[in-house]
Length: 427
Image (cartoon, rainbow, N blue to C red; front, top):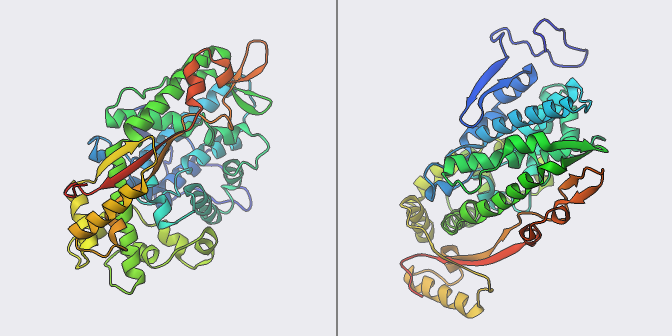
């Protein structure tokens, strides 16, 4: 987009008299220099809603296990922007017609796909906004930005919500082989130091193709996809669902739920203005949209709101709240066990009684001091297929096209049951 070009009627003039050069390069530890080719992309990156992602860690509390895993959603989104450009360039090279408007909109869709994440990413997703997926929040925030930019994100929103006729654009943003996963697997490996999850991104990008407006993989890329699926499964058990991370995240969830309970009972719980709103009220997607200032408040929250509150709550008179926050800050994390079998009711009753006695709390409040549930590893679900385009022109699901039996095994959902409780409680 030329700086001398005039805006079309009804669109925003992106020229900023205080910053004439918007064609920037960003130095990324994975890819080197990432070029920002579009003035609109630059303005979106500069927007406060996107800048907030600088303060939301990609992997929540995983740095309590892997100290290097302190990278952010901001870094990940920029990496996804870069990979989207590389994929679209490759598809153009293969003869796929992609207009400049589609190119820019697809880059923006993947750049903004995570703006709906709240503090600590997935860890608190079902706590601050129960039942509301971060993708829905992303769409609301993108829509509000679109109003500010006079409709410049219209096509981006269509691609994001899968209402654009050329379906492969949405598949690049959200599918089982999307740009999001291509970036976060290698980025999470890089920052955590876990090598088992590294994938051949360059090879996968070169093997992508479009067939009847659907994203497919050329047959000669099948081994790269097998490695991609294996790597994702390994990263789930070794990083994303590491038992110590699960224990820490359950502690944080219990902290927030205890603060919500106290606040709604009339207790004064110090918190930032944005966090206080979500401690006092439970929002649905509809009430979040209709309540004045609610979406804006959520769009201002980040990890700092939580950590700031946790430090204050450590000295709160409520024994449960102060105990949990103190344990989390001192890394005295819950002990945790993972089991293929359901946790027995007798075990849960025993831990409830023991925790209640140890911390001198009512039995009704004891569940704040332990946690149980299930974790799920879905490396590949056959409902959303990764299609292999054979040399004969046929389409085969990767689970059928692969000659490795473990690919079929990966398509089965694996669930494990967990139970975690304070280490100073003996069962």
